[in-house]
Image (cartoon, rainbow, N blue to C red; front, top):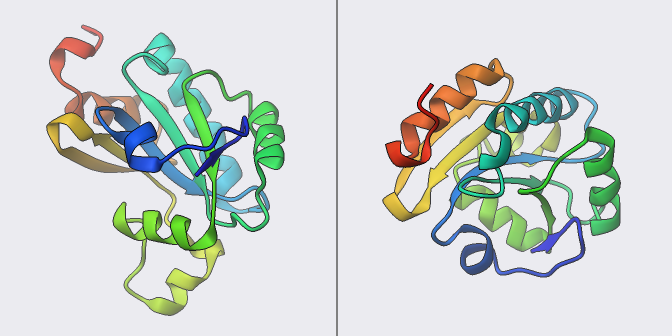
Length: 161
């Protein structure tokens, strides 16, 4: 995969292995759910504060990698005010599709699954070291998403509140 900063990474080894992640799929040309989802996740990042980049990594993966270049993703990141610890990723279409399916962002209806406008507006919460996974609606209010994150992250990394 390629990041919005132009870095080339291997998804499992460089992005996921040993990490706690919030993962969503989006595309920059989306005018429906994606803008609302990205705004909401920016608020989640604000609530998590310095935990993002320290013990939590946020990952947004383009559903249209043939269009969403690292340069376009960088503009998108700036437009939304995405902070440190959050990577926007693109890559080869086949690799992104494989990731999407393996991470559970697919639909059993092949017609719906093939239409990026009907993608799942969800965020996957992954605690890779503990093999703990959850999914939350990405448009859920940000404090509720943070509560869902806190159920997946070990107690010693969460805020006491």
